Amino acid sequence: MKLKFTRLFLVALALYATGCSKDDFSEADAIAAQKELLTLKYQHEMDLETLKQKGANALQQLINTAALQQLKLNDSLARTSAVAAAKQDYSVAVTDVVTNAPVADAEVIVSSEGKLFSTKTSAQGIATFSSLYLFPTSTFLITKTGYAATQIMRKDITLGTAKLWNTAELSNEISGTLYIDTDLTNSTPEKVGGNVLVTASTSVPNGFSGTYSVQFPTYTTATGTYSLKLPAAPGGYALSFAQIEADQKLYVYGTEDTDASLMPFQLPYMASVKTYFNVNSYGVNIPSIISPIYLKFPKDKLGRELYMQVNGNYNSTAYLSSIADGYQIERLNVSSYNYYNGMYYDLNQSTFDANTKLDVSVIDITGNIIKSQPLLSATTNSSGKLQITSSVEGGYGYVHLRRDAAGRIVANAKGVISKATVYDSSQNLYVLTYTSNLNFTTNLSTGLNYLLPNKGDKRIVNFYYGAGESRVKKVY
Figure 1 (cartoon, rainbow, N blue to C red):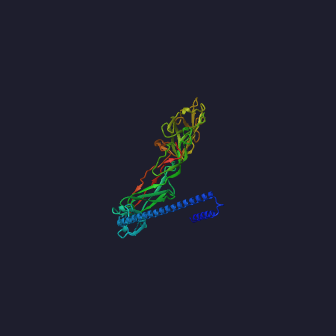
Figure 2 (cartoon, rainbow, N blue to C red; figure 1 turned 135 degrees about the vertical axis):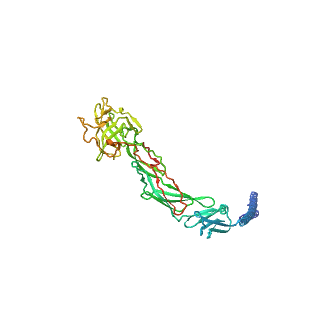
Figure 3 (cartoon, rainbow, N blue to C red; figure 1 turned 90 degrees about the horizontal axis):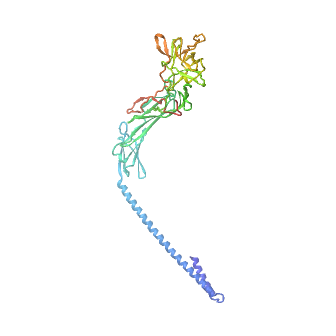
C-alpha cells in the first residue's frame, strides 16, 4: 500500500515539473498521466474493499467457532449429567461350577468410561463395585489362578452367578490304547505308536447363559497308549483323535494300477497301499480273498499260467492224512470250473498240447502252509483241453498225484502240509478248507463321550482306527 502512495506522489510531482516547462510536456503526456492516476486510484479502492471483506469473514468465523464450542460444552454438560445419573453399584457372585461353592479371592475386572476397575471376591464369593456407568452388555471378566477364566455380562449378574472351573485339580483320568489295522494279513490289530494327538474337550457354563469350551490334549506313547489327566467337569468329555496316514498291507486281486481282469491267470498278491485312518470311521473296501492255496498249471497256448483254487468245496477239495510233521495229500477231487474273484471261468478256454501230462504245482500265497511241495499232474485230451479222469487212489477230476511211466506215485508226491481241517477222524482224513477272509480287520466302534462329574473318576477306554476310512488308490 505504501508503494502505491509513493507512485501517486511521483506522478503528481511529474505533472508539476512538466507544467513548469511547457515546451517539454505535451497535452498527450498530460492525458496519459491522468489515466495512470485514475487507474491507481481504482486499484486502491479495490484493495480497501478486499480488506473490508476479509475482516467481515474473519469476524463471522469467530462467531461460528464460538457458537460451536458453546454447543459442545452444552452437550458435554448434558452427557456428564446423564452419566452421573446412570451410575450404579454392582455386585458379582462367583461360584465353583462343579461344587457350587463360593470362590474367594477371584479377580473381577470391568471397563467403565474408558477405565478398568478391578476388585477381589470376598469369602462369600462376592465382588462389589461402586458408582460405575455400565451398559447392559458390559462384561465382567473373572480370573483366578488354577481356574479357567470366565465372564458374565452386566444384564445377567442378577440372574445367576458367574461360574469358575477349577482346572488345577487333575484328579480324573481317561486312559487306554489306540489300535489300528495297518496289516490286514494277520488276525490282531496293531497299536498306533507314538505322537498321535488325543484331545478331551468339554463345555462349561459361565453363568446364567452361555458356555465356554476347554480342551485337554495329550499324545500317545510309543506303545500306543494315552492318558488324559482331567478335572472333574459338570458336563461330559468328548474325545477326538488325529487322523493317521500309514501304509496298509493287505491281499488284493489287483489295484487301479493293475488289471484285475487277468484272473484266473494271476494270483492274488500282497500289496502295500497308503491309507487314511480315523477312529470309528471304516469306509475302505476290503477284498474278499478266501483261499490261500492254488493249483498252478503250465502256460497254455496263449502263454497264460492258469491258477485254480483249492477251497474245501466238494468239487475243489484235496483230501489229506495226518503224519508226524503235518499232513500229506492222499487224493484230490477238483472237477468244477474255476471260481475266482466272484466269477466262473470255463477251463475249456485254456488250450495246451494235446494228449500230454502237465506238471501241476501247489502255490501258497501266505507262505506258511506248504512245508514240502506236493507233486501233481493233469491230463489233456486230443483237443488240448484239460480232461477229467479218475485215479487209482480214489481221486476224481482234473488233477491227481503225479505218477511215473509205470503208473506208480512218484517219490514225495504227497508233500507235507502244515494245516488241515478234520474231515473224517475215523479214516484219518482231513481237507484244506478255508472260510475266513485272508484280510482280517477289527472295525469296532467305541463311544466318544464320557462323564467324569466327581473327583477321582477314572475310565479305561480303547479306541480303534480299524481298516481305515479311505485309500489313495482303489483295490480289488
